[in-house]
Length: 210
Image 1 (cartoon, rainbow, N blue to C red):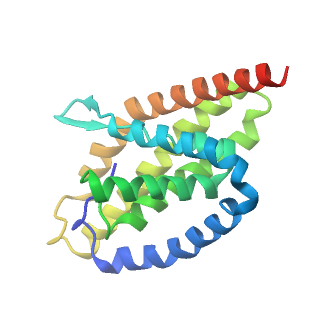
Image 2: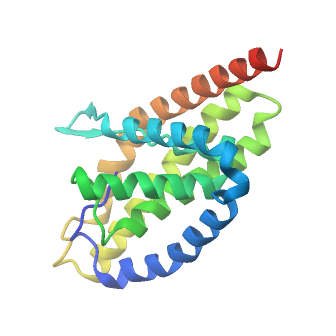
């Protein structure tokens, strides 16, 4: 799902940085200040799990692969801004040390995978989770991942529209190539992971408070 460096022109990446920068500042000030120290170990652990999940490539037909994101669980437990900040950190580390994504496209990847998808997951969880926790967690993560993938597809499609010479792959081809694995493989895995992890964490909390 990562957009690599060189795929998007500054006409897209710079406005994305303008949009992402104040959100990064807001997220850090609101959720990572001195009064949030007690929550940092849990947030750090969830961020580490998200990092590991994104390094596990799931093979799909066509000679490519897909992966989970893990940000929906962060959004459900800690809110969309925390998910955005943590996913941005994951993407930064991946781009600097593992060759996934890139610095010029960091803002686009972060907005897609760390904000759009997790925010939708958080809204769906608020609407469904209280009444049906497992179903709500699954649907929130599944649909959140589709929103993230669709955002990436839209960014690539916009680049193809603005400059086919830089990105010659037609938008319909990119949409099928990315959305189909997301809908049939990654989304299901993301939903199952989120539902199971949330259930385990709920039981652990219950046993600790008993």
